[in-house]
Length: 586
Ligand SMILES: Cc1cc2nc3c(=O)[nH]c(=O)nc-3n(C[C@H](O)[C@H](O)[C@H](O)COP(=O)(O)OP(=O)(O)OC[C@H]3O[C@@H](n4cnc5c(N)ncnc54)[C@H](O)[C@@H]3O)c2cc1C
Image (cartoon, rainbow, N blue to C red):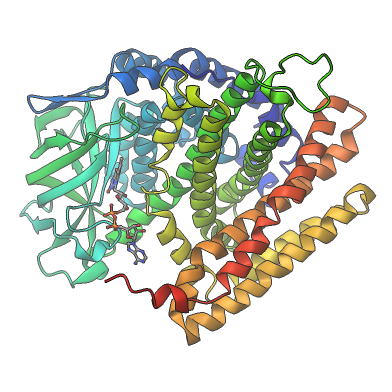
């Protein structure tokens, strides 16, 4: 089994030193979220994750969810831990106190999301989709629906799902067929089949609230004719109690390579009663509230799993002896951590993970500003920033999660390939993250065609970065790194210009380069976060030498060995698409 120690010190380093977004610090309701409170939350979060949730990863992998006689049973231990999880209020952490939540900002709750991902992704998904449903209902439903459904979801007694995918319709939601027919009482009769539904059925909660995309009778074709419906597993009575069974049944669950403790369900909706959420035919917009936040959380899944892979690879390399290192002192066999190549592998992991965590922290502050700042213009600016960077965090973090779990297996050698150490499970569990919530390639296409195609959002991002770096003042230790950073920022700007020209002149060139473009933006954004960390580290070196020296060394590694990959992606991306499109595959 893998081990995991939550990186509370790292997280507190970010909270104490890099909670520097002026707009975030203006949010009145978060002014009392201070260092002491956050440390208390993170220490408690670390305990439940390390002691109770981590063991569920192995248990769920060895005893996956079972579908029997129409019901889904979760793996051993899940029920007991979920009961404790909701009793301790963990589902309510970031929710509105009006509905029973604790009102903790995303700037802090993102750390908790990371810990859960590090411990057991399967277990995390039950509450993750519930919070996604909570966000969607909170933003788009009528007040009476919010009052009826939100308190139970916040409490964790009811869970949520997101029902988009159908057998013929995955990425292309315009192909969606599920029907909704208006009834005399104003509700809708929903009929159709949804597949691949995470937590579609299980035995952890009293009720399951499905958010279902469907088409009403006279709807236009394509994505413009999709509406969103709330369809509970059990109808809810006027006084908010669980009532009769609705027409939703589980057809089967998938047998899959990873996240085996999470049921991926085929759901049949047969004349089930649904309530429309948000405006008619605008369901996709409403669902995007859930999906956009979910995409960021999926990026955090990649980060969390990578952290566990790194911790275990590091521990193993301090235990396993093979070969003699260069300059071996006594001529005896050395620990593999003494080999430069193993250190290279570990430093790749460490520098990416720490940089990504810092970037996620920076973006979380932007999310809080976009949701909670008093001034609409400020909220809109932050929303645009979040929209630009959502596909980046989703794809860049989860692709890096694949590389890091792969490299961790390699550090373990043959023992990484066998099941005993649990490291191969991290690779299998992480493999879904580049696929669900919109595949990573589709995220890259979204980034290029929707986010940077027109001038505005991207330029705003660059000017925010420039202003932050200017505000550093003269920290001479990092002047050199700022020059290096500027070079990569210029590459990014030049790639953006190239993309905009190609979108007009040669779409195949643009489309073939989307993934490379996303990578250049990802490497540059993480480099920006490293600059901020390096500045703080140089300034505080005297206070805690080991911690800050290590940060400075890791940041330097990122600039020397990781960031240059952006240059290759730029060269590859801008080389055009003729050999790609001329390939004779038939
Ligand atoms: C374990 C698991 C859990 C899931 N949970 C949920 C859930 O809770 N709710 C839900 O609704 N769905 C869920 N899904 C579905 C998931 O979101 C889809 O599998 C995913 O969006 C991709 O759709 P698809 O599988 O139909 O692939 P397709 O859309 O068929 O894509 C196949 C390939 O073609 C590429 N492609 C597709 N369109 C384009 C394009 N326009 N340009 C370039 N390339 C393209 C894709 O990137 C991909 O590589 C889950 C899936 C799994 C496996």
